[in-house]
Amino acid sequence: MTPPLIAASVVCTDFSRLGEEIARLERAGVEWLHFDSMDHNFVPPLTFGPLVLKAVRKLSRQVFNAHLMVADPLPLVAEYAESGADGIIVHREAVTDPAAALEQIRAAGCQAGLAYNPLTPLDDLAQWLPHLDLLIIMSVTPGWPGQKFMPIALEKIRQARALFAERGSAAQIIVDGGLNGETTPLVTAAGADVAVSGSFLMEHPGGLEAALRDLRSTA
Image (cartoon, rainbow, N blue to C red; front, side, top):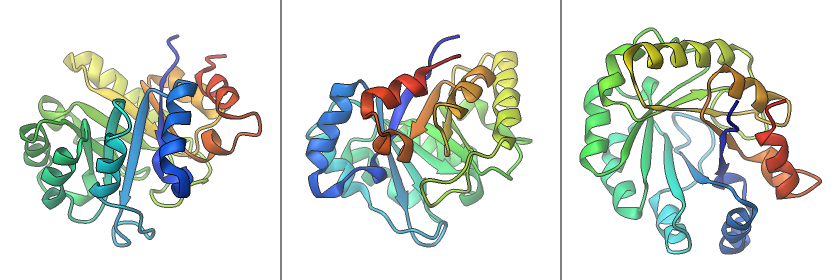
């Protein structure tokens, strides 16, 4: 079983020394950076907009994904693309026409992603596959970091992986929320490609390297 790529959640870094944090993540071997933009509307917290991603882009050439946890994401697509996002993910619950939203993201030059909340079924996912590059399966209720993993995500990962195999889709499955040394091997076994980690990665008592070993374990 191939270990997952690790995407570090930037919102869990120390913003008083953000440049140092980004460099530390790169040195440790984190593959992607994950930017959670929250609007105090779609989710309770308020985080940051594209200016933070733009500032970090000057410091790093890693893969940047902008996860727009906002009620009205489409007006933000162009600005995030111009700020240096490689991928932009919008929530299924926040868009009325996912196909059009995903094509707008692709037209801006980014990989197009769709996120599903834990209680949102994947019943309509097959419709969007021709437009989809990234799928986020939320394993916590979006918003606050440090929440407990919801096992309902495992069956959704298996469902998505089976659908992708049946339809020949190369879209990547990203799992976001409550991932640690115990839960990440479970999502990897279910078919996830990428694990988003915030609190576990940044607060591990053994440091970043030990956290990454735990997250990449397939035991």
